[in-house]
Image (cartoon, rainbow, N blue to C red; front, top):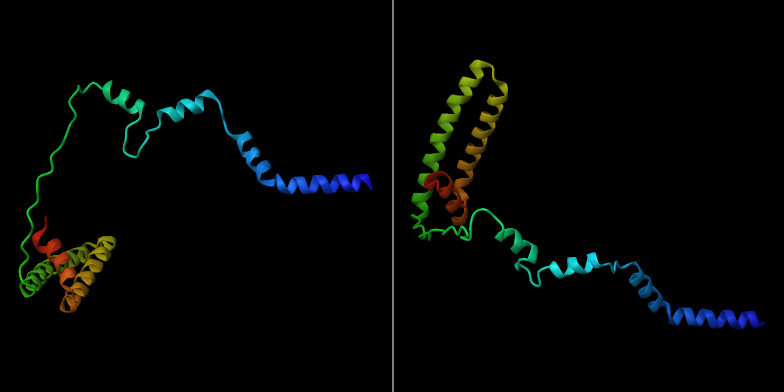
Length: 153
């Protein structure tokens, strides 16, 4: 009977200390060596900040004290033509590319280069479908095609 009372006491104590026991077990697995604390000291405090090791490596380089800063030229906004003119320009560019690819298809067919023939025919079909889709294309999609095929920058 005394054993039953002790078991009940132990069980109630285990339930109350359940959180503390799990927390203690995680603390036991944490590496508290000096290597871990040194590593934590070298970590940057905020994102984008360089650690102490990075500063040492950067300063010990042979390139000198000057940092290479590349300046990005300012881009001026592109003036898009009216949608009707953009459609005509894209259709003309696609038609020229399609004609060039059709001549390539004939050349690959004569040579028997079936791998390149397959790629050229797939590209011709893609361009033909794009020309068909051009009729119902939104303004933003039309601008994308115009930039890709006409403006080419």
